[in-house]
Length: 186
Image (cartoon, rainbow, N blue to C red; front, side, top):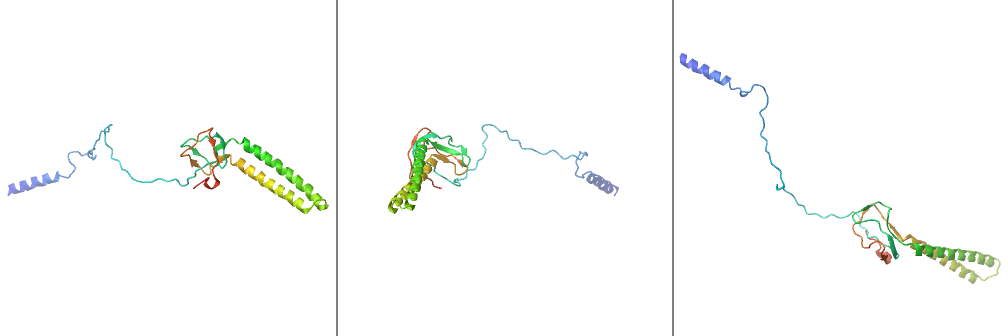
């Protein structure tokens, strides 16, 4: 029976030594295994491809409403233009002269109408003569406004902050006028 007690005591001592800490009593964690991959020029990186379509928020085809010689076209394809900045400009000399001429004709017609009105009040001219002078005055005003408008059409400003995607003409080209109905599309 003493032999059974001896085997049991030995078994208890063996079990007491298995507390799970192993041989190292310092309490430090065991080192972890790290997977290493060597990166090189021939490493294949998986890629993903997605099908999609990118559209601009707003698209505008810009062109001049009047014809002329293009003297300024600074933006290049791919350049961002801030809102209100000049995109292109025609030589405005002819349009400036036309506006000055229309202004002079308007002033002449205005003075003629004032004189004719005074003569009408003193019954020195007929009503039909005054009506003709007044019509000439109104036509001169329309011509003046039209010439001013044509002068304003010699430059194009960016309608919003925009990216220039295409240029269909180069600087110093002659540009024909386009019909007003097809000037812009959004």
